[in-house]
Image (cartoon, rainbow, N blue to C red; front, side):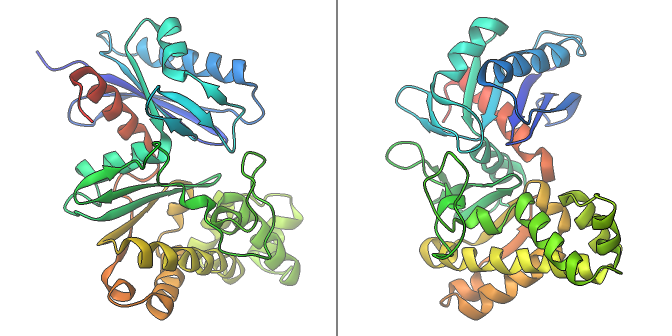
Length: 320
């Protein structure tokens, strides 16, 4: 008999995605909802409801649940330390959920989950040294060095979104004390701000018309850019430039073979990556300047979901 599914849950700053994942990484059932503005208790309820929704759509009981959450975790006790974008601090998330769901539950950082998926089966599968980034509400990352996921002394390694790249920049998210952090220039919100600036200067463009209609969102900007709207391409390119600025520090520090970009903003593809590649080539020290491939995640926006399911499956077998 085929091995039963594991339910993966991937939370970002604004959305929740859940799915039943089989052994071959097939998604047998899927559920998605917005979570903007929910309280901590409402978020817990939303996770439980998503798991139950997916659970009811598969023929067999799932083996476990894995949750990817945008927060730093204390690996010694499994507790969330802090979440820059969601109202969670000092919370034993897996324990809380296990009591409600009555299944084994494991939780980890959402970007770490994406890195696990891309390293085991995606765009970083053959790399011994890699960085896997997710760009959406903010930036998360997982670091692979010597073919192993690096967690740091306290389990919080990979918070690349909160390295400073602009000392004169704006304050970061409420949960971060930083100024000019990487994700203040490279995120869905950053793309919207840049698009609004460009639209104001080019009101007759497709982007300008979308702004006049109140339709400026990150997906709309990306769609217009793919359709060839020059103003939208300019906005995406400006964010891509800042992506390159941040990646210069990443490349010089870690010297990865490959940098994988996933998350919602990865839908922009080379319109985002080409400006970043240009900055990397110009500013990073060799060999990092031309040694790090910059590619889109194989699993796209599903990388975190698949990785969360892998974390849940690993929990059952005691695998790191």
